[in-house]
Image 1 (cartoon, rainbow, N blue to C red):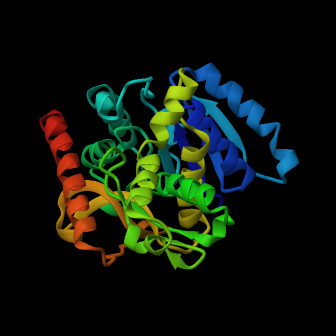
Image 2 (tube, rainbow, N blue to C red):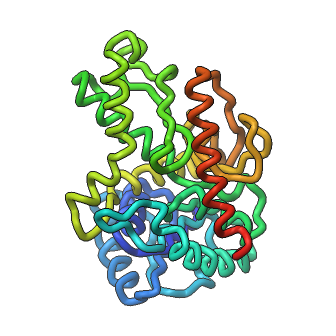
Length: 310
C-alpha cells in the first residue's frame, strides 16, 4: 500500500515539496490550495514530469479536504510568507488563524496522520496544530531545525571549502533569532570548529545561519526561501516513509526533556513510521544550555499570546 501524502498550500514550498517527493517516489500526493485551479494545474504539470524520474507516484490537486483526510502524512505549508523587513514573529496572529482553521479540518481525519508543520512562526504554529487537533505528540512535528542546520552547513562549507559530508553540526531551539547552534557538537573534517577558528568567526558563522532566511527574503523581495525548506521536509519524510536513520533536529512537544514542558522547540530526535520515536538528550555546555533556555522562554512568550484563542 502506497503512502499518501497531503500537502496543504500549493505555493513555492508546497509545490517544491511535492516535486521532490514525486522524484523520490515517496507516495501518492494530494496538493491542496484555496486556489483550487492552481493546485490542479501544478498537479498535472508534476504528473507529466514523473516519467523522466522513473516515479510511479500520482499527484492530484484541488481544494478538497476529504482527500487530505485520506492521507497518512500531512504537510502544512499554508500561510503568509515573510516580506522584506518582516520578522517571523510579525506573522504570529495572521498565521495563527490560518493554522487553527486548517487544524480543525485535519482533526476530522478518519486516519491517524502524522502532521508536519512548516508555516511560521514555526514553533507556535506546530503547538497550535497539536493543541487544536488533539493528536498525540508523536504525530505533530515542526520542520525547522533541519533547515537551520543545513543553512549552517552551507556557511561552514563555504568557509572551509570541504565536501558537505565532512561537515557535522546541529541547531536547536526556536526557528528564529534565538536559535542555538551547538558549537560543542560542530566538526569540520573531523576537527572541532572551536579548534579551527576564533570565537569571533564562530559568532559570525552562527549569525549567518540565523539570518539566512532574512537574507533570502531581502534579495527575492516578493517571497521567501523554498528550495531548502522543501528539501528539509523531504529529509523528515524519508525518515518516516523509508526509515532513513539518523538524529535530526525537529520542533517537537517537550514533556520534561531538557527541563521544558508544554511548548514546541527544536530538539534532536529520531523519526520513524509513527512519527516522533525518541528525543535524544545531548550533552551541551552551560552557555549552550543557557541559550536554549532563553530560546524556550521566547517561544513560551509567543505561545502565551495565542493560548486563550485556541
